[in-house]
Length: 82
Length: 219
Image (cartoon, rainbow over all chains, first blue to last red; front, side, top):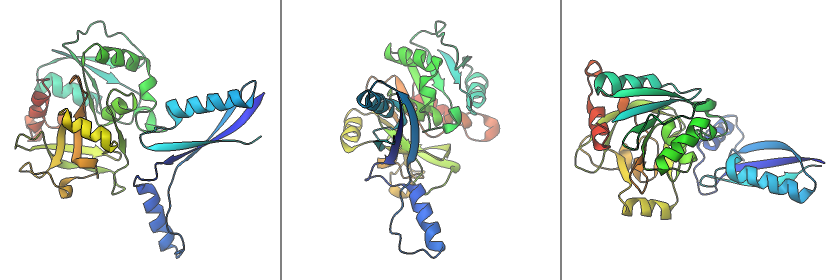
């Protein structure tokens, strides 16, 4: 079975995110002043062939840990969409 | 001592590095294609250099994809056997991504690509004027790792005033503890953001890069 998996990769909460800060500045310039903070991450979609959801999760977890996210600077969350 | 310079798709300081080593420091240089993996012409007294640039378009994260290239598998093996490896700029990012050096290089704190001369020092009271050119040069590691680096003398260069004084105002990119370059615990793998190869030619009126190669034991 093919599983559609989405990986959310975000900078660690303690780290300064300059991209987010720049976007926040742009939003304020637009006059949208209710937004307090912006942080930018990555959204990665995977199609995984696996016998079970558990197996697919294992593959997604390994991919995230070894390549898609760098644990020194990022954390990730795995979500199944089908 | 012989030098190998790895050429990744997107490397753009590889020829600067070759010219500096060959023409200015009179070294033998062999260019190494990322798809090859033969390092049999090198002994562990030699040095492999990962040059600056934008390997694999900086896709995913700077250096993240380069680490899987065939040549990098040989370079990692070479480093683990005690061979000398120097990564400059993107090369430093690749060394961190491949686990040969601890930590990571984050986007500059001021959100800008920084291209200018800065001063760095190895703590000997002297500062060297060396160019930086990077968008992701903000060195970061957790406190425990940083304390270990300091305790083992692995922080080789910090951003400083031209008199060698360390202060946050001389730190161009927000690097933690003003770190510009580190080495591994064994002392054979070096990574630094500034470009010493851009300061070795008399025609460029700055020879401080030669001092950097000397400090690293490569000249």
